Image (cartoon, rainbow, N blue to C red; front, side, top):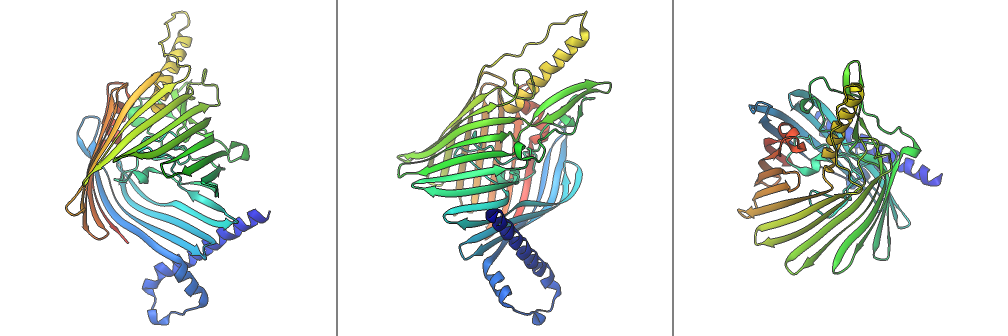
Length: 454
């Protein structure tokens, strides 16, 4: 009880302090500075709170199903970040983003509390409570062990980190010898923002409200990671027992036709990663086994158990950085999907079997488990030039097995300190029937951003 009381006390203290500071921040412009008062609490607050953030504007373009050029989005965004420190015993962080503009033709104004957490140290154990973003894995882009934080791949932004979504959780960290131990409890479920929408589905197919775990203790997720550092190699081993952030897609038919329902499923994930150097080269790797606990043999929305492996090598040559990675995936007890045989005497059963077959194919596309073995390559090349004010980057992905690919070029120019102009784009495609082909117009774009940080 004392532990939970302390957590509640620190959370309330952070909320109260932040409200006071935010009110003062936004009201100070309308107040006469000579009329202000200074109390001991104000002095303490000013010393322990650090404010930063950014303001940016952006335009995104793309194409529609007829390959006509269209505006995908335009917006203005401001982010306010608050860091609170208290005598090395406790700290807190919050990031709030305000957005206004258009997102794929829909006008949007929203306030996003991206992170908001409070933490304190209790006898060598760091305890953090609140909305957090946690990233695991040492590979680049493809991270088999990174299963804590959900993502929104539809976000219109030049920064990969903006796709990550915070979730409420309890985290503790401690150190035993050379090992850093991290434990996580996730009481509530938050899913990835789904790429599945009416634009990539046949006419007449409905998407129903998702079926996600209730807010119950038995539905919570938990994870453990042991991270170690030695003079020659860094690495970690991890375990997750929880709900996959990417749900599967169940189906049903009724008088109105076919409906698809996103459904969460639970899984175990055992994994590890490492990074080291060999002369002038950097080496990194990551591996994970993902084992769903549901009836994957009979339920189309639950994938078969599968394993993922990523191996990468990087090298810097002057102002140029190069990274190349291989990613492999193996599906345990893989069964090839076959079309059902038509039976004129049982047409309803045939159509049900055919629908189940197509839904299983769709689910496999999203989890990347369409084949027993699949192989892909990723590469990043970055050149920092003009006294490190111009940053040119080209990233690419190619799935050798499914013949899908993505190309992501970008250029960033530092106009002045804390003022940056970004231009770039992303193009995704693949053979007919592949996932990249389905989401080509949804995910491909070009953009221009101007960002000022403070």
